[in-house]
Image 1 (cartoon, rainbow over the protein chains, first blue to last red):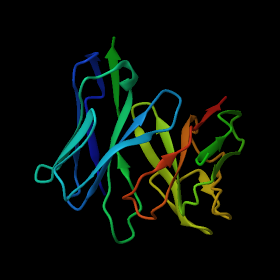
Image 2: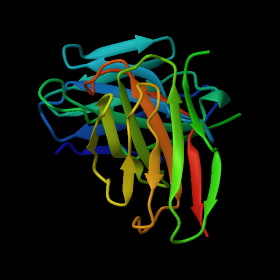
Image 3: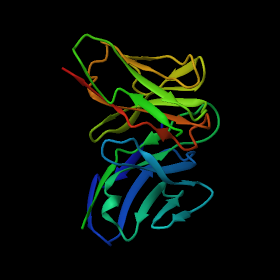
Image 4: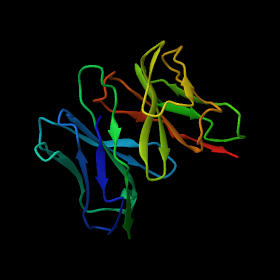
Length: 114
Length: 114
């Protein structure tokens, strides 16, 4: 089955700096890669996703890049703010057949210091 | 407000007791999921249901049971057979039955076994 590795497990940055979180996946058939943000005591919330037919997607201060050849994808947050502090999860899945499973990475705790 | 409602938010249980966690959605979504979250482990799939009266085991179904008698409801029972039930449990739903669309999560239920 699919295996998703996520690094780093913790990341501390100064407000205004950029943050990058990286994930690798094992199944070359995977074609959907979402990122979720989980604030303390809450459920995760989708912040951005990318499908395998594109290499990069941006939404204001966040962007995701995908390298299908290397089987890795990354989340980039620019101009970080204290409210960006949370746990971020990457995930991967593939469409079609009987697959209904989204495989998550183990998460990255991002701390943005004022 | 549309969303996922989980209850109770906190639950304490004695060893040997079964406990049922409630999950209700008013998003008219076909698919519903239960995930377990442990520190440093990411999200692991317990059970999922793509349609009423049908559900499938995920990666860690042992010691758990579910039902899907109504589209809006997907309760999870943690049985006494679950060896390590203390965890944060997250319910989610999605419009699409496959695993390539946004998951909407509830705020979670924290179960502690005394």
